[in-house]
Image 1 (cartoon, rainbow, N blue to C red):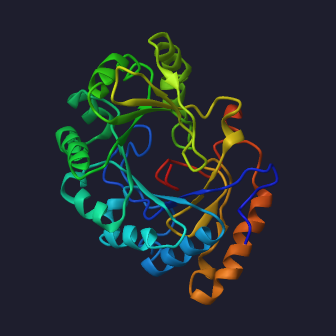
Image 2: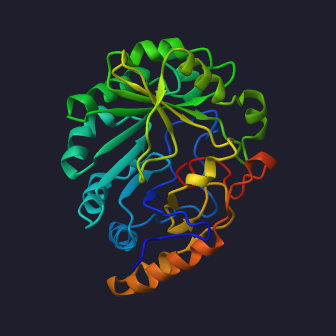
Length: 328
């Protein structure tokens, strides 16, 4: 089967696979009131066998990288088995996770042994009190210990995600840069994105990443090239720093031009865009290994529906009520 390609000649090498939408943090920009089941309760998330079949179908169509997301993916009791299953798929060379880090110190060595190649940790502030205020959890030191444990486990670098928010962490660049000067951390500032439940917070705290970009360039940071299965970050390096800085700026006009990723929810629906409308159901084709050809065909055919860009500029947030819903 040929490489997954849409009507705008974009090729898709990267799958973001949510394994649960449950999260134990209450971040102000995502789940300020805590986790609430979407629709029916007692949902059955994708099983290990379904994840294996799904990953095999994407890999057969040229997918190279799978990122396991949530919610908080490590809340799955079989999470290490999920990593091993995805990592064992022929054609998948990169298996990553995005985590809030609360289980990182305890589990990261096992995840690495299972085949996890990359880690992203959410860390919106280096101030423990502000971290608590943003996340609703007094776990700053636990998450920081997890980042250290990941480096000790042999990861050459750890990516740390900070959602950029006006009047909360937008004046913290100097502190963040001092932190990564001697640490192999790629610090990524992600612009706050509007969701169905977060309109008021967005209007109060949104700030363009251009503010950070200007400061970086003024201090001698330089843009680095992007690989074909890399995420959307603009990554900057500096000869005096061991770490890097990435900027994810979805409100830039050209943001969607380089889209290389597709998303599957924890219930088995293919989402062509984080801010698109209802997903394409795949689960009925995940029951048996003999369905792979039909599964690949449905995925490929659905790409004809993928739009050229999202419509965040018009305030259209699609089906995404919060970022835990289909894995951010």
